[in-house]
Structures are given as structure tokens and as C-alpha cells.
Length: 339
Image (cartoon, rainbow, N blue to C red):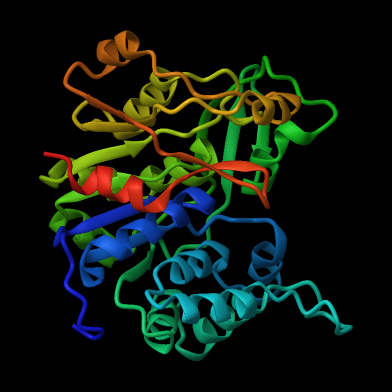
């Protein structure tokens, strides 16, 4: 082992997710579990920001979530601190087409070009930054995520789905009824094998329709989960999200996972937060029509009779961001201690 550290846990883990929820999960896991046994699976359908621009201008896979996973899995805090400053730099002091791009995204895009493939580029970046855990794009196909709403309206692209709750004409009554890709989503073979080999499969907290469920639309992923003997764990979001999960309870998340996983698969364990959230901070969330996700255990049991629901005090408040997040170490420990 490179740094001589002895790890308490040696579990073969595959994670699915995106954004800060996935980041927090990976930060905790890499501290407690043997890093070489962790595979972080990331989506490749982001259409906004720097990632979306690079996808359009250079024809590369959107690198934003890949970059965040690589950062989360760096074991040396000093290395991570320096890398975060480098990755997050937006080249604001220069003029020209590169202005506004995340430097970390540019590194990923260039390595994909040099090594002639997104999967090979990510592997090169992992070696460059001495990251022992693996980061795997779920697909190397060019994907465009679509959503259908009640009434038949369709939303084109991940960003339009993700940000629909912020639009002036947003109608909460028009719920998302289906998501799909415009074209075939071929799987990354390494992801399929990682799922088959895993002992634990974890869906992180994150945006339900834009970060989590799309993984299950990639060919072969749902089938691999069905064949795998791994325990399937869902980390329940702390808060609802306007535009995707308005007024959702835990059972609503389970219904969606059951729909996309199929009847043969299912969530074995749901991890939920149990500590009370500060009422003053919740007022800030309420302005954005967000609220804590409640665990309606009786309804959950109707959908998944054998599910195990684990409730623990996992939420912490980030003063700088004015947001609640999962505490990485406690979250990882809760999962790794599951029987």
C-alpha cells in the first residue's frame, strides 16, 4: 500500500451519482475503505456550464463530474487543497475562448484527446494525480438526456431538466413522468464488470432525474445489477428539489428506483438522516420551495417489503455555503458497518 495506511474496511464498492452528494460519499469512503476497491461511476450527459461548452466545442465527454470524483478521491489533504484551487480556476484573468472554463475540465478534455478516448483519458488523469480508487464513465457514448412531463411536454438536455424549477413559468403540477436518452447508450465494459464484482452498490444523494436514475438507462447496467450479488444502498436526499422532486417523500424515491430498476431488482438499504435541521436555516430553503425529505416508512415497506431503513444523524451545516450536507465520515461508516 502506497502510504502505509491500514484500512479498517476492505469492501468492493461501486458508487453512482453526481454533484456534491457523490463528492461527500467518496470523501468518506476513501478515508475508511481500501481505495483500490472503490469504483466511482459518473454520468456523461451534463449539458451546462464549462462541461457543456467543451462537449459542444471539442466533442469530448462532459468532464465536470469526473473532475469532482477525482478530487474527492485524493487521499492527501494538501494535494486535494492544491488540486481544488487548480481545478476550480476559471481563467477569469484572460480573454478569449478559454475564459470561464474550469481549468480542471480543460485538463480532462486534453487528456481525452491525447489518449484518444474518454475512458483512457480518465485513467491517465488518475495516474497523473496518484489516485488509487477508480473513476469510470458509465458510458462513452455521446448522450443527450430528455424528460417528459405530465401533459406531454418534453425537456431537451440535462441542464433544462436540472434548472426547470428556476424558470418563471415553472409549473409544479407538471411532474416528470419519464426520462430517456435520444440515442443508444452503450455501456463502459469496465462499469459492467465492476458491478458484477461488487459487494456494495451505492446510489449517492443527488438530483434524482439528472444524476442518479440516468445511470440505469445505460444498456446493461440494470441487468448487471440484477446479476450482481451486491447489496444495493440508496442514500436519501436531505432536501427536496424544486423542478425534480417537489414534495417528495422517501417512498417517492423508491417508486422511481423500482420503475427504472425493474421488479427483479430493488433497493436493499435506505440511509436517511435523523437529526433535526435548524429551523432558521430551513426558512432559507423554504424560499426556494425546498423541504426535508420525510421517511414514510409504512409506504416504503409497501413498495419494498424487505428494505432496511437506517436513520442516523448525518446532516451537517456548511456555514460558507449556507447548505446542509451529509457528513462524509459518518455517512461512509454507516454504510460500511451494514450487516
